[in-house]
Image 1 (cartoon, rainbow, N blue to C red):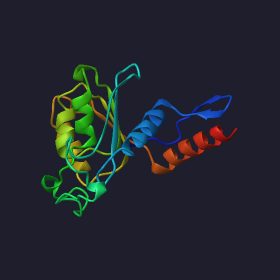
Image 2: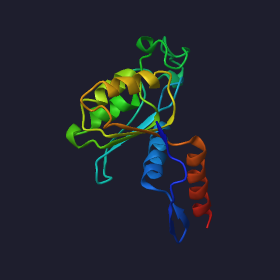
Image 3: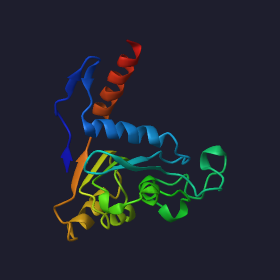
Image 4: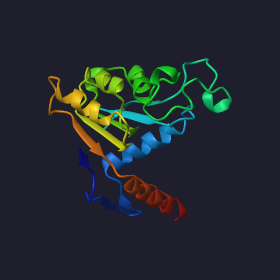
Length: 180
């Protein structure tokens, strides 16, 4: 696993400009604010190799169902992270993004606020994904990475974690820019 550390940012008139990985992760964090899950709020942004957004997704129950965060918790709402996934009614952010994506043969990178579970990893392995970027780890991360190494894509899928502190700095810079 790689961790994005001291990669330089370029400068603009309003201060340091986020690199592309920070920019798209900031978008994933914004998408996560739409989540209706009370256990974990996850956002996902899929891009192509030209840095064009293909789709976004957040975790929540199926259309028309009562939302967990509006007083209707599902049976898995109180479970530990990574446990009782079959009891949770939420569709994962990654699954929603894949459903929204018009062309899975163009998926180059996934920016997800949380590393994908095993099932979502398997779904991504049937696309052209080559980069998986996340902020928070997930209990199934080791298994997800192992599965990705046992496929024809073995060694071709880059896993990259962006530290939370680095993303806080991105938002601090953005907040300062809006005050000027």
